[in-house]
Every structure is written in structure tokens, then in C-alpha cells.
Amino acid sequence: MKKTRSIFGMILILSISFLITGCSQDSKDDNPLSPVPAAVDPAPPAAVPEPTSFLYKMDGVQVDNSVRCGGFYDLSYSETVLGGWDNNSTYKPILYLNTPGKTTGTFTETDGAWALYVVSTNEVYYINLNSNNVCLITINSIGGVGKRIKGSFTLEMTNITSSTPTDKIMITDGSFNIIREPDFGTAVSMKTVPAGISLTAIANDNLENLRSLIKK
Image (cartoon, rainbow, N blue to C red; front, side, top):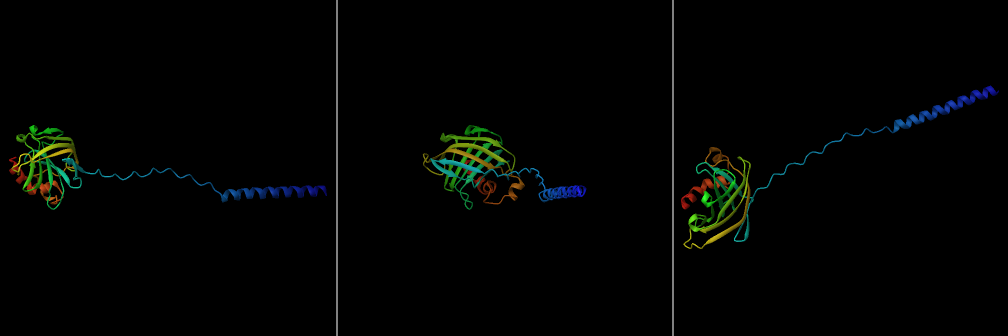
């Protein structure tokens, strides 16, 4: 009798042990460990285009031509021509800045730098040696076509279409950060630049006439 009870007890203990082991295994199967996801580097932010700018103060009043500005190298005159204008229909008022060659530096009228401010056919301001005006144009950097031209300027200009030699304007705090257009005088500059949007197209329309006016 004791032997039977002993066998029965062993069977009971083994059954309980198997039951506990099975439950434990089921618990593990129900809650598998989730794999740790691999670290993913975030995508770099999209590059923001550098804005163009063409700013100055005329007799103390701020002028912003940042939306309409440009520059190019004139092959015929070996000059860098920069400009900013107010209106895409008339191109005026427009301020032209010209420096010799296509290099960095600070240029005055003695170096061959010059400027024009055109309000209309009958109102043109110019910087020249005879009027003892101020002309200081600095080009800090100049890249290739499609790159940037950056710098600053200060000007005092006289109305050369007026009989009053004291009719002057003072331009201060001038700065520019513009895109260099195709060289002026090349086939590409005449064919690919839409009129009214670039300085190249505007110059093609009237800069030569203005050069004649100032005998450049």
C-alpha cells in the first residue's frame, strides 16, 4: 500500500512539473523579444538656394532691387556690368555698375569704374571725373557663369541730362549678391536670356545707346 502511494506521488509530482514547464514555455512564445531596429540616419535637409540681393540707399531712402538684378562680363569692353531695376516692362529706374575686367578688388573712377542711374530718357545720372563725384565699387567675389558676384558700392552721381550741375544723388550702403549671366556678346547670351528678366537682355536693348550718351 505504501509502495502504491509512493508511485502515485511521484506521478503527481512529475505531472505538475510538466505542466509548469509547458506554461512557462507558452508564456515565452506569447511574448517573443522584439528585435531592436537598426538606427537610420535622418535625410539631410534640402538645400535652400541663396537669395539674390541688390540693395542701396538713395539720399537716405532704402531701395531694394533684389528680385530684379543681374550681372555679366561684357566681351566688347572688357568690363563687368552689374545692375538692379524696378520694373520688368520699362526696365527703369535702373542702376548700372561697371568695373574693369572680371576680377575682385575695389575700383574708383580712376581705375575705370563707372555707374549710371537711368530714370528715363530725359533723366540720366552718371559718375565721371569732371564732376568730382564719388565712385567706389568693391567686388569681393566673382564666380563663373551661373555663380555669384558679391560686393558693395558708394556713389555720388550728377544728372547729365539737366542744365543744373547741382542736380545730384547720393547712393550709400550699396551691396549686391547676384547671379552671373552668360558673357555679353556671345550667341548664348542673346538666345537663352528672355527680355525683361535679365540684365543681359536689358543691356542688349539700351546699354549701347547709354554708352554713346556718356561717350564710353
